Amino acid sequence: MNDHDRDDRHERRLPLAGARQEQALTTRQLEERRLIHRHESVRTHADAFRELRTRLIALAGGPQGESRNFVTLVAPVRHGCGGSYVARNLAAAFAFDDTKQALLIDCDATHPAQGDALQVSAERGGLIDYLENDALSLDDVVYPTGVPRLKLIPAGRIRETPGESFSAFRMRAMIDSLRAHQGNRHLILDGSPVQGSPDARILSDLADLVVLVVGYGQVGTEAIDKAVASFPPEKFAGVVFNRRP
Image (tube, rainbow, N blue to C red; front, side, top):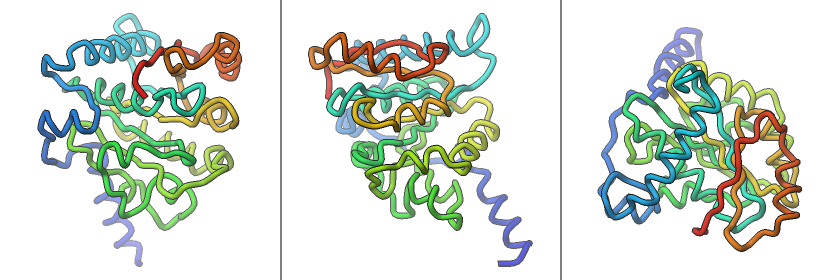
């Protein structure tokens, strides 16, 4: 590949910001993917995620919360708390706003969920593939979801111990690049469970805010307190008690 080809490839990468058009999902397809939408049938859930979005914006920004984009880590206390469900719908809530873009990044390389949930076939690979293969570009691993203004980076290949990849320079450079190239893009990291792994704590170094997900009735107070203590206090946004796995 010559320098001219590299330049062309870089220019083709720019539509990552969300300029590409895609077929929007129907209401039935959204519900199959367990995604909130604008219709009355899921109004309670949609309003809850809108409220969470509003609170995060207020925490991250100025008086109106509109001063900058930010990165939110959504991490469950343990597997089965529904962290991926919360992360997916928080991203959808950001995408509701016509002035915002949302990028959901599946960082749970041990139990990846978002590709299957959103019915995205990651034929070019995902996050772990990108971090381990310099030949892949960001554009290669960002996929449309059928939800306007919402893109997905799936986890890609399964890794039992992905923490080293998350702490590598390429991961931080990826996050910085995604933030810098579009000022209205909000990044949602679907993180690994806090219990049993350092991965969520490692990912919190890349995030501006952390949301802890607790399965309603599944986790005791002591476990919640211990999970909260895993994150920097200045980044901790709060706890979501989730009834849905």
